[in-house]
Image (cartoon, rainbow, N blue to C red):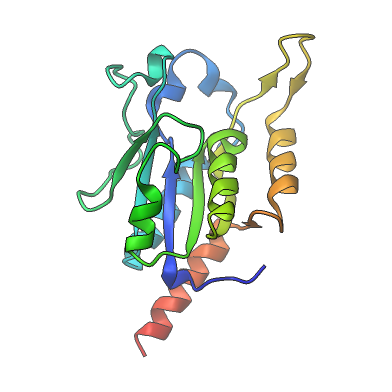
Amino acid sequence: MKKQSIEKSALLVIDVQDSFKAGSRWERRGNLAFERNVGAMVDAYREAQLPVFFVMHTDEDDAFQKTSPYFRIMDFLTRSDDEPLLIKNTRNSFTSTDLQKRLDDLGVTRVVITGIQCEQCCETTTRVAADLGYDADFVTEATQTFPIVNSENGDELTTAEIFRRTEFVLRNRFARIARVSDIVKELAEAGTTSNR
């Protein structure tokens, strides 16, 4: 896959909201370094003065309704006033928001994906982004997920299996699988180059 310049990229922070902490689901999360990794990505994008978009999901589930006390960004993150907050009611971040217009207005050709859930809203956003022509980096270690139980037979997919499967289906088709350290290094090198 041809890699667009990191300077033409935007960071998408998808559904990092307290809605996922309602009930007991959060106790079974798979990525214990999630907060640190997402925080590092946000800090690196701010340092590079590149766009950061926050997206939140709303639906009929109690904790995801706009009136719920859980409907807020997780407190390990603080959104700056100049960082857009988009509210979606679809699994991808494009269809029910004006994200595409905002990205295009900024000349963004590459998106870097982080957030919750890895195999749902993050993966779906990545697939749609690729179909719309954006270059995509999927930062698995800056995503979160939970075990999935098959309601028909009780079989369960572990979080490790979900992360692995998601990387398999996205890699070289819809996205590059990226590490936090790789993106942070690329941002730092671009900043050094542009300051010469």
